[in-house]
View 1: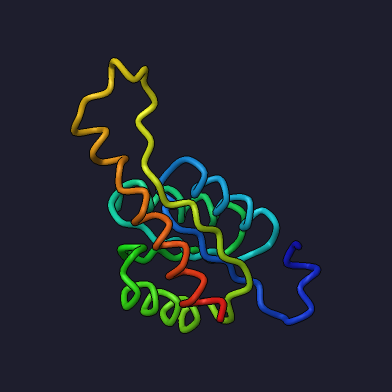
View 2: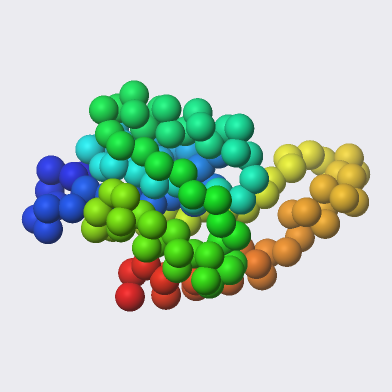
Length: 134
């Protein structure tokens, strides 16, 4: 769906982890398709500004909100803030995760521990689904 196909009149999307990788690509794609885009992030504040500028480069409004994706109250507050600032939310892209590409033998255990809490990312998907799309 592109913004032009949205019969409801809203043109807003929320992508998480928009500081790089898939989240940034999703945010830019939504903006290119005509959506105003909010980005939720937990770290990488210096990089999220670049994402918001990229959204603006497509002629759309962009906004960034710091939040822990697995914290139900924090995500609920993000959904409320997005609606207040940009209007009705039509699309959510959830891509939170951490990746340290390397051969297994080259992985540092601290890097592995940072990638390891997959349960938190899955929990974040449930929080997103319950918080903004219900």
